[in-house]
Image 1: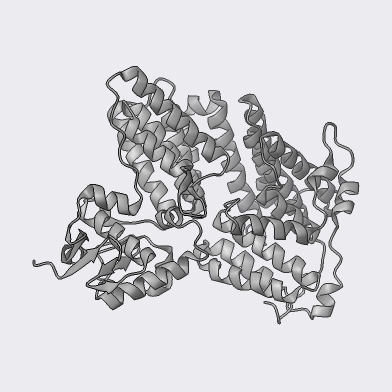
Image 2: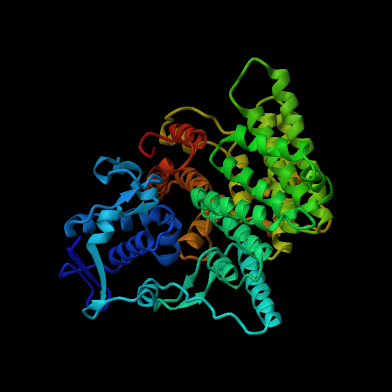
Length: 519
């Protein structure tokens, strides 16, 4: 087939002789590289755009503009996981979530050029900002050091939430971020087990970035590596692959699949022994099992109250086992996750009449959340964590009326708990200065967390972003900042489509309890 369209990558950048916006051109070149390079399905994930353009205010707008440019250039690009579809018949409603791809015939029409000649693969990689592979060291010991240094840096970035590259004002890279770090470690891996460690880390980063499709693809690669090279003497990598697969299923609210993976891990040796004897695996197993049990207990208002109470107690028991395991392997980060989950579970169960009394549950929940936040600070966090903030703000307004579409005057008459009341209810805790852990006001807290996201000082998951937007809208409206509340509601509504149905239903119900002029 003759080349029908030239794509000039050098400045001034053009497609078919027409000037091209850089972001649209970047996506087109990446789609062409993915298809012509033989990558599975030719798929380009949304998280790649997030990594390349971290300062973009809206990836949805970036994608929409790119596809408008594609249409202007006469290029049909597709989206979704099935790259065999005809793009003409795809529903554009879900396009902004990706993944994105070019049909083979479209990719064959394009010729990537640099100053009028065909671009080399290296030049395409340079244009896309991709790191070139590091030449292997002649001395295996030095190469081993490079791998472990790169892996350690990537793991530290993952622990600190630095998932993607951070750019300075001029566009130069300052920090590589966990995702690029694990990719670099993969290129330096000297054997199958090192490759598996890098793949495990990269899959964890994709999961944190809400790209569960990419995480599953990496886990499939990890399974193949473990099958070909063995799972190692400890069985840790094999067990973590199963744990992470269960977390991915849970992230897509496929609770039955997640539960089946966990159940199989306890029934089949040697995996069952790893769960029993490896504290990190045991922590992950019990923490996720507790979340599943919590969801089962809170699902609906079914007639079997006894069963729901049993599930609630099981969730609390599992959280207790997870906390023990977290302290067993000395991870404050793991321990703070369980402490936060325990506090929220206690409050939710009391609200549903499943465990304890509401008047005593709120102080108990607060104490757990303050413990979680203190552990966060011990682990190196400089500000209130997103989940702790969301949980505290939700509990603080939890006793307010839940009337649908109240008047603004009635809504502003509600009396949520203020931070000073939280301190009084929580009581004294040894080693812990609770006052230093709480904000001046809930609205100030929500505003500071959203500002951190907008200024690229923090990165939140989709569910966290939605939770923060809801709390900000609630407290802004309660404080009379109607315009700010409306802005958060609009942003929340734009992001809801990306959530699983059960999470989406929670936010829709919560929005219905705001005054009509805001919701």
